[in-house]
Image (tube, rainbow, N blue to C red; front, side, top):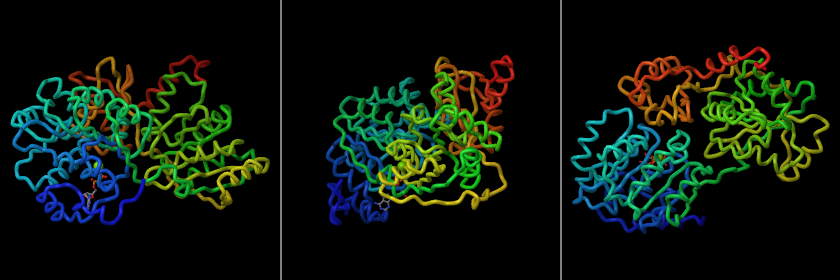
Length: 481
Ligand code: ADP
Ligand code: MG
């Protein structure tokens, strides 16, 4: 990507109406942010777009300006639609669009999110809206009831698309997008670019232009430290690293399955919530492991390289190389899982004397010298146990019961409920739904779920940890281990 020249980063270089230019000035938007400068010339010309940029980079204006530019205010058809992962984000986006739309007195922007009562939304829609901003589940509901008409839609935006996929909105996004007119502009914004995003865009975008402001896997942003260990104390050293650096989410790589199992046992004995991912797990157990780790309710995922292949987990604070890999390329791949987006990464490496040859190969490939530190200089940073920030709740009922993430989000955040920001990922599998909530509100969330109705029905919800404990107890003693 070539960087824009200074003149090109002025809004006045864009074909926007004078009224809109004036409004931008009055908002204090003096020059375009990099993502705006890269995307606005394309989107104003009508191109589909995939844009990747970090939070706070000004993405809303990047999609709102082309939407507003094309808007026919005299028509009261919905002409722009933005899908967002949560109510809070939808509210933020709607507010920003309203500010950008101030140059025209009559532009109506409506939010349509789960957790709010249907009737006022239906009434507002009946009065007419130019732009709707909402969560995929609720937009779907309106489409099913026929209260939202998209015949006049010109611009469709998927905002924070990776987070929407994380929250399990894939099927709703697909269903909503299928109901949009074929001839339209589609803009997809995402902080990361996992495989699911590539699939979505291949399915719904037309010859999209791609802009990316900010590189991932930036090795310079990864802090790499090496520690010499004796083989006998290697696994305890992992616990020592975790208790000192206290990362919220860590993948610990081992070279063998047996090492994975042993490490989980040692970490558990240190009070650290660790789960193993290795080739011997059944699909259902593998899913459950990944759900717990990706939603940040387990601190450490212990994995072999093979088992971790294809995993895309954002927000990984640290990678620990428990064993040094014989293949230096694999080392680069392992540590590239931390330090994505705008976060700094941390790679902690343990090496015994007989692994120093492998360390040398890694240095050669990275063209950088290893920084060594002494394990016995590390003290636990605090006496508190290392706890993951979230807790997983399991709900009986899933796809077969037609439960959607929006239903669960609605049940938790509905009247007098919890804040959307306290709720993490929602995964709906065939028979179960898993929702991550902040540790401090887990009890309240479980009782709320057991009291209110989800999808019009009473449901049973429990902490996943308790479910797993009981399963182990019920299993025949010889099957328990
Ligand atoms: P993102 O969606 O990328 O996280 P936002 O669109 O929410 O970012 O924008 C972040 C903040 O920056 C908002 O407060 C917005 O009003 C402001 N902003 C966006 N573009 C500009 C600009 N060109 N000049 C000044 N402020 C801007
Ligand atoms: Mg945004």
